[in-house]
Image (cartoon, rainbow, N blue to C red):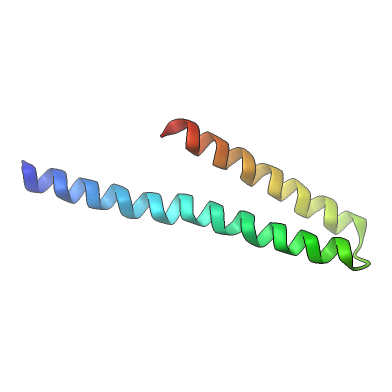
Length: 68
């Protein structure tokens, strides 16, 4: 029983780092992309699309935090 729990904990930890870590890394990358686009003369449609993606990821991050 104890070994099953250890395996479960390891699997949950791996899953969490992949899923939540992915969201956090994606948020950082989008913020960086947006900063570059806003400093340059990028198309406003592209900027709006990136902002929408960022808002979705921030919402997902909030939900993940509330579930912990």
